[in-house]
Length: 302
Image (cartoon, rainbow, N blue to C red):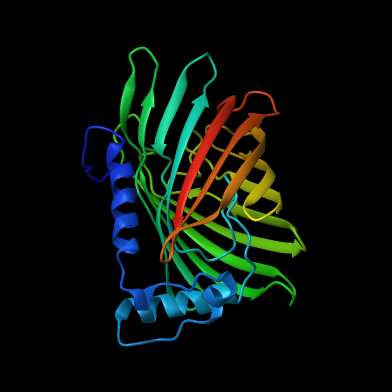
């Protein structure tokens, strides 16, 4: 089943949406803003009559109960985050073609309740320089996180979270899967001083996964290793694995190593910060779906 999809002209829409969120959050009343001191920001906010103050008080309390690492470039973090995220991908495909993804399906991340995060993805605008070239919107995606357990730094520095992802076939014909996809995942993280590990294990379940020529039910395994240098620098390396036991790509296994550098969180105004990252997925197995992928990521935590 394919749902209708709007067709704005290019990827400037995603950038404009990110800028609008930044301006809106920066303009919040002083009562909703976090103190400059980071530790105070985690625990010092108290609920008030202002709805934003009450919301951000809960967010501060929830985040105070977990580690304070950075979200990796590719691996979905087990931490609960509240931010707007925009990623840019430049993929080199087999045969010399390339695929540019504006937004990469990222979007708005919110913490609406204790131990709960929802991610409302913004469909990516994608361009493939094949002959003839193709461009259009990708599918819509959503992610629900439920944090099972966690401990802040000094008290264990660990986290375990369950995810449930959903992709809906809203994209244009060249960039849609044409099927609904559900992805249950378990995510774990552990820190040791300035070093941390974050990992996920999930399975993608399309509504045609059992068909011989369907998408299959790939196993998704990601592991990210980070080190915190100075105040803002987070060098990282990730391993991103996908294996298809069945379906169109049955028997294929692909592994990418992703070195990168994250910078953040840099204060901007009030609660709003900035985190940016750059890295490259490099295929280390034969016959991957793409050879390498340059990743640029920008996040506005609030």
